[in-house]
Amino acid sequence: MKLEPIKYEDLNAKAKETYNFHKIAAILADYGYNSIWLSNDWNGADFIAVHIDGVSDIKIQLKGGVSFAQKYRGKNLYIGFIEQGDLYLYPHDDVLEQVEPVISDKKWIEKGTYFQTKITSRFIDVLAPYKIRKIT
Image (cartoon, rainbow, N blue to C red; front, side, top):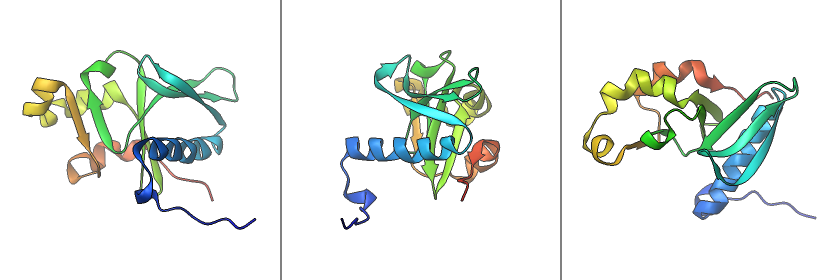
């Protein structure tokens, strides 16, 4: 069997979502979490990560970058995405509380959504505590 690496940019949207789930699940496994994909968004979560301690679990919405949405408020969700090989996993409501005055643009006000594909200087300090490095 000969394995060939894939090009992420060649994947379709669903394949990218699956790929990102497995990358994040692999990182969380190093920290004692078993990740379980949900076939439909359950209370906004794409998957749940359950810790081996049997007590801790995290409901995670998978994204391609920094993201906030009004529909995620009050659901105890974490937003997870990978940038440059590092996992960012942040509590949606806590971080939104810090940045909402900054992101309140026309789209946020009209549609209740905010998204950036790359972490900008606006968010680098806010998200730093939520950066989880891959253990090698």
